Image (cartoon, rainbow, N blue to C red):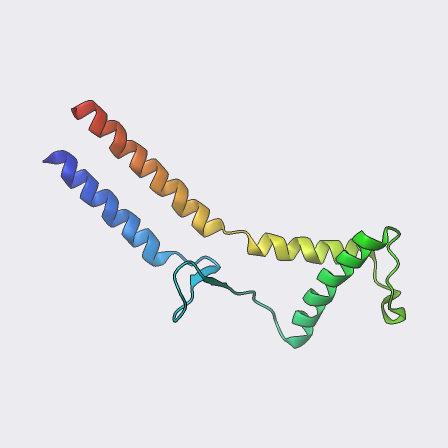
Length: 120
């Protein structure tokens, strides 16, 4: 009986964490299962355009090899600035909350598993 109360408490804790999970991966309503929506926060349209431009610039730098952009309008853009902006985007896309949740669930489930083995 004591084991089932611990299991129930663990599942309630997991459920509560899941309800509070504020990660960037969201289940898209109205679509089939398995599809999620990822959002990116930007300050304004200019910030959005800078992010998109930086992603494209890094691609050009990677393909070009010498860091010279093809467009004459972007001659003052440095590799360092573009790569830093892309790395910031990638860091913001990392699912920290989801990974914390997975670690917590794994820890709780291993504790329940070891208790079940001991009681057998």
